[in-house]
Length: 503
Image (cartoon, rainbow, N blue to C red; front, top):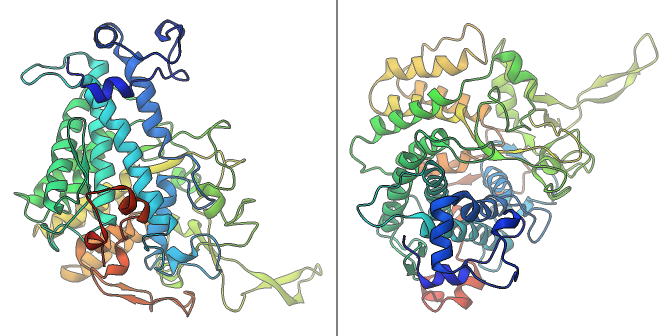
């Protein structure tokens, strides 16, 4: 068993997560190495469960403000930076929408950095406690599952960090990335992008293989979520051997683990529940009365009919007119129910004397995709298998297998639009894959990373409902899409100074 002194000092008894027989009479005492070894052999979940709970909780807890509620806030913020959400009010998430929330003193870069490194710290603790000596096989299923979750989570956290604080891998893999902190090393200077990706690839490979054949509770990372993250990571690594075949391989594993919803199930879903096997969820967070963050929550900001910011308070996150018109033109597409034009009372009345609804000027489009269960207690969805179907189709196309790419696209689209067939080819096929993914994944935090991975520019000019005074065009790999290192980190870290800062 491998335990270093830093982990021993960090190993406070986690009162809220462990049962009485684990607790010492003196809550300020630390576990000895012998006691830790004994627990890991006889009942490993008692020593790791608290740290796993803490790691996951860090992803959805309230932090500094009402637009700062963990990973789901980060995902919404990145969507606001792109082309498919229009925002015509200057309230929460406005600076993200204006592409003006990247400065070193600003809350968004600070919160993203802190959320991810808090998660990394929790993952490191679990890995350090469980990781076997070199050459020793970890046989306990509970321990394999726990360390698999930790490795997978750490890969995911670094994947977010490297793509928010530097340009994508293929732009310059020798560019300064982010500090690397693991269970047994601490490199506080900015490490090259390639080194960060080497760690991510190593971690996700270990995470997937440890999780394979084990069972994870609802709300936890499992082998299918790990496979999905593996596919997403590989899609960025342009020099990976057989890149697109490997992306398809891991996307298929995720697809095999979670079925698509039927059209009826999709129409009635609301994207508010993680548990169950009829919601396409690969990974998410279970939110309860005790853990919800009320107005500082995703549903508060996104549900146009709830009592939060995005509904009753009028801070609508609108689907763009371009996307609304695209899905409206697809006869029989159940996703039309996700977006609507919000009408107002006109001057004329019907035979009952009720005002006839007319279009507002300018038109207001609202989303009906996300529907709160009540009290802002909706679960948070982080990964959905639909994304893997679109990534698989794209990977097949990029690998020169257009026929298979069409078949992959038709598989998911026929669950949204009965009788769908794709007859397009070449660039038009890629555009079709992209369009259908944009509709399907609206509001789920995938759009910015797609722009980065594909080296594409952002163009908002195709929609009529973007606010006219915001930036409408962003060139590929523009610095506007990269956060600056938080000033609090520069001030506290002797290995990073102003010369190391992003432009």
